Image 1 (cartoon, rainbow, N blue to C red):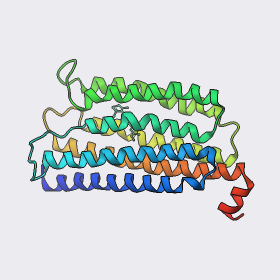
Image 2 (cartoon, rainbow, N blue to C red):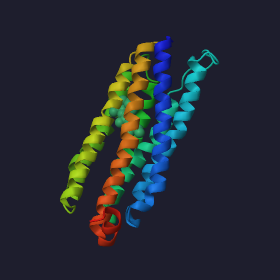
Image 3 (spheres, protein in one colour):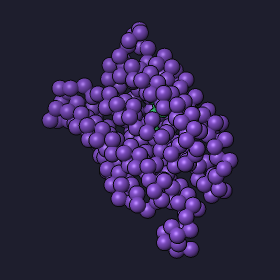
Amino acid sequence: MSNGSYTLVYNMLSLGIASMLFTSIFLFVARERVAPRYRMAVMVSGTVTAIAAYHYFRMFDDFKHAFGTDGMGVVAYNVGYRYVDWFLTVPLLLVETVAVLALAATVQRSLLNKLVPAAAAMIALGYPGDAQLNLLYQGDAPLWGLLSTIPFLYILYVLFVELGKGLAGQSEAVQRKIKELRLLLLATWGVYPISFIFNMNATGFDEGGFVLRETGYTIADILAKCLFGLVIFTIARIKSAEDDAEFAKTEFKK
Ligand SMILES: *C/C=C(C)/C=C/C=C(C)/C=C/C1=C(C)CCCC1(C)C
């Protein structure tokens, strides 16, 4: 791998570690700054970034072993760390999104019963393609990408159509934030299938495709987990202040 490519991916993974680690610390420490009923959403956000921080350490190590001068190709870079990470964090991201709305328990359960299995299917179907396992035939990655897109579109449908019904009871300010949150989700989750395509037709190792994929996944991860978690935290604070005048007075000095 060229020096430039190596440095770029090295720095991206390093940025991933820093973002995930310090967002986790912030969210855990700041959880007291929201009312108790919204703390679960903030804790789940912090758990997502903590799980991702761990996997970024793993990927960083793995990358150095695969391409650095200390390992020099002894092991092949394993994209599996990302998929294990997503398999855990993507359902949790959907849990935090639904949790922060504090909807009726039955509505919440019905949404999650649709979103969580779809998220698991999306990740599980993407892996054989991204890892170039060629399970069905040589060069079958586009097929896995296509299969994975079906649950992906279903998740977007649930979030934009079904969740929309749950928004009716929320205040103006919260509705605006939730819409922002959904747009952030759409804009960042949309980066993953595009990054997948960059490396999809690689036969053997394709440096350009690899660098674009890793850079795309890392930037998307930072926005979809850290920034997203901070927006969840903001929504939790707005809702806490709306629910409780005492909280509003001490936290917002209004
Ligand atoms: C924190 C990690 C997140 C939010 C990961 C999200 C991942 C996706 C939305 C992945 C989607 C994919 C497709 C829609 C098709 C190609 C294969 C995937 C798995 C990259």
